[in-house]
Every structure is written in C-alpha cells, then in structure tokens.
Length: 113
Length: 108
Image (cartoon, rainbow over all chains, first blue to last red; front, side):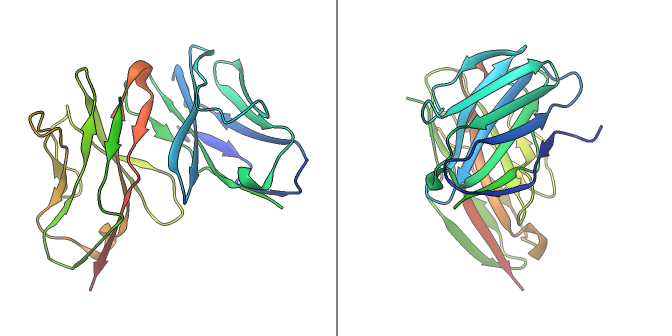
C-alpha cells in the first residue's frame, strides 16, 4: 500500500483564492483526520471523520474552512477565501478504526501570500 | 481537560549519551498514548504505542499512571535519532491530542 497520499505537496497562492487540499486514505481504513502544523501552535486537529461521517469539527478555525468525504477513500479540505494566517503544513491521517494508530501523509505545505 | 505536555522544546545530547524525552498527560479515562517521530520535512511516523510495550529503534516508553507520564527513553543516542518527537494522547473518538513536540539533536 502506498500509504496516505496527499496532494498537492506544495501550494502557493494569493490571499482570497480558494484552496483545496486532497487526501486518499489507506485502503480499508475507516477513520480520517485532518491536522494543521504551525511553528506557533504545533499540531492541531481540525476535523475527523469515521465511516465518512464528520464526528468532531471543533478544531476547524472558522467558516472559511470546510472538509468533506465524498467516498470512503477520499477527502478534501477547502479554504475559501484563503488568508495569509492559513499558511501552514496540513496533514491528513487515517486509521483502521478510531483509537488505532494513525498513519500520516506527507502533508501539504500551504503558503498564502 | 485532555492535555499533553512536553516541557522541553529542544534537547541536545552527544552521540552515545542516554536520552529521555519527557511527556506528561491529563486525561480522566484510561489513556492510550503514542510517540510519533518526524524526521526533517518528512511525514509523522508512529514510533511507539504504550499498549505494545515494545522497543523500536532502541526507544522504550513506559506509562506511569501515578505520575501521568509517558517518557521516551533510549540508552545510547545516535545521530540518526535527530528529529522532532511528539507525544500524543488518544482522546474521545480516537482523535489525537499532541504535545508541542521536542526537537532532539544528537551531536557527533
């Protein structure tokens, strides 16, 4: 298995633009987690899904952020409109079930100018 | 409140020296704790899980419920151990609560 696959690896865009980050889960995994990593705040959970259903989105910063799981193996995290303070590395992780070890993707390094 | 504390932002040791990366947690239930490692600009990788009670790359970690700690230890550090280490607690629903991370630097 190729592991969790995220795309793009890097994204540079101007503020106000819509940004879409993508994540492909490991086959057979039922739980999906989106994290954001910054120097100031470290690793923060944004949202997580179990069996395609959002369970906890309390970490989503504001309404500009949204996440979906259109099917069991794929998820998107969208920021619209983007702002410079959204610049960070965004990680996606999946696990077989909740409370099982999570497997992380390589992350998307996002820079909003 | 669920919380993970890693008091040291940076730990610098010489090759061959013992290493202990500290982690304390706050959790009302029965905790599940993990150590993840992130080598330079790479993805986070699971290093240890407390219920496995195993040693990976020479690292061990013991859960001490009395002290609410899960410190990571290695008797002899190697240069390739230099990385960011994150202690994490599995909370409700399986979401991971991470500590702020400790950067381990092993000098030759």
